[in-house]
Each structure stands twice: as structure tokens, then as C-alpha cells.
Length: 78
Image (cartoon, rainbow, N blue to C red; front, side):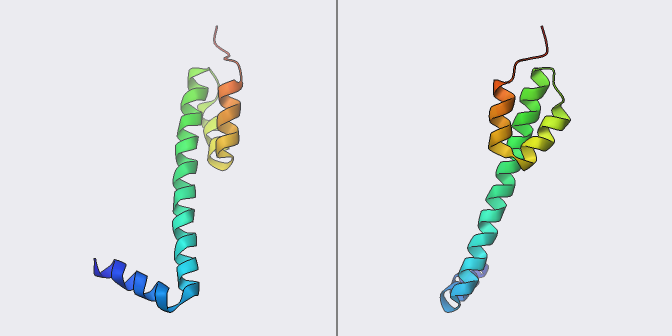
């Protein structure tokens, strides 16, 4: 709890520190979202008979766009 207090105190005394902290938090959320999108893309691609690894890597870097594409493309399985 004291650590949070120290962070808030530093942010109020140094506005540039607040911006740095917020950028770090934003980066963490973006990274988590990218990993989640990559896993979902890999699962969807695998169920459609496509390369789970390839689509998962694409999902990691181009998250929402890849997710939309992998959902829309037709399945290779018949």
C-alpha cells in the first residue's frame, strides 16, 4: 500500500512522472490485449483448418484486424 502512495505522491510532485506512469500502464494493457487477440486468432484459425501459429503471430502484431479477417475467411475443412 505504501508503494501506491509513493507513486501517487511522485506523480503529483512531478507531472512528467504521471505521464510516464500512464504510458506504462497503457503499454501493459496493449500488450495483454495483443496476446489475447493472438490466442483467439490461433484458436479460430485452428478450427478452420488453417495455420494456428501463423494466424496467432499475425494476431499478436495486428490484433483486431487479424481477428476480423480470420473470422471472415472461409474454412478449409469440408
